Image (tube, rainbow, N blue to C red; front, side, top):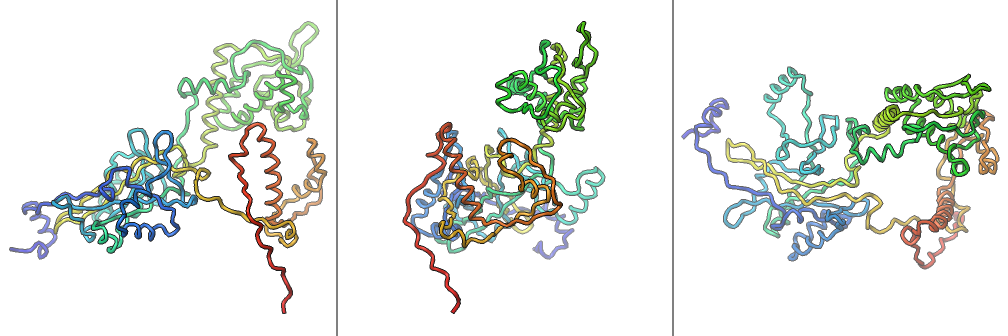
Length: 533
């Protein structure tokens, strides 16, 4: 009989379909210890958590030790909450590979040609994978084939696929799901429990962001309830309304009206409503911007005529449209610029019909859609605190001579949520502050480079600034480099923080939750620094 190894590769490919294949028995990648999806993830708080895990696995009571590593926080919705490395919590996925035969012998690690884990985000009943395309990051993308991984193609096949892709105008590199390492445990660990153990450190923190624009929000197509809330938030001047006189009608606008102050709104609700309108138009909706949505909103506002002067018979002798009013009044009343053109408050705001009011609302929501695109940054890999994730492991098992590798997947882990940085249960980080008697020994350790305008501002009378007066930035065109002591800055900030915490505690009653102080023995005084001998 001629061995396949002695044949030319072309002859071998022709003969392979005609030859009897050696049957392959079933192989499984299961949670370690015959567990279920809830037993895949274990949590370690040991600093050298990998070696600590191996010690636990070699112990006679390794099952009980792993069970203790699965006692973690579960939210009110029953979803597991896992901590971050900064919480001194490390998440590990544990699997075992064995042959589904009598006695379930463990798989020979030498037959594992490749292995890994994937972290996937839950999207309803579907799964999303973190996809990359060469150096580009596509971010979370819905998976159409969640039970496959893109292996490195044969060079000849890769060349053919590249030609086909160029003909189709397809991207040069297809998107591939991010795979994290899944390692076999050392032989002594596997021998101690008689299993082929594979482990992976689950990544739950990442600085990666998607290179693609974040998904937009069409504010005009929101669900009815959400849209109603947005419309309710909009100023009354952006909706249908009856004719009404304007506050301080005919008066020249001034930047010191403080139109957004709560005291101003309390004293004159109509003036406060104008402030809300101008603020929303200028800041929230960017009506003075250059986007198409901004132009559409200003076009609709331009249809509203505002009288600014009348003769003795009540006939309008001067007027401006609402778009012009926003364009000229917002810089004065909101940005507090000088009224160099002598702009006066219109006499009244005319009636706005239901049809025109709906067009105003639609244009305003269109502006919010554009603002969302501009303001929302790229999506971070684990930026969504409410997202739920699962982990799956896979191995590629070498087949018999002439047989391709087999791709075997584990079951999914239980869903988990990554706890935000402020929600950890690790011991608090201690920052040591110097004793008051040692403050003079602290040296300036951080420097601030200030441009001339800020330097001149800081030379002004801070009492005037406290009283709401504007300080001048005029002065010498000299920049400054000012150094400060970090301990001094920390102590000042700590004192101010405690003052405000005490004030706000009257409203929120939060002191017992956010500040915990316990007495400790006085630390020994540092030795006095002496001269060199």
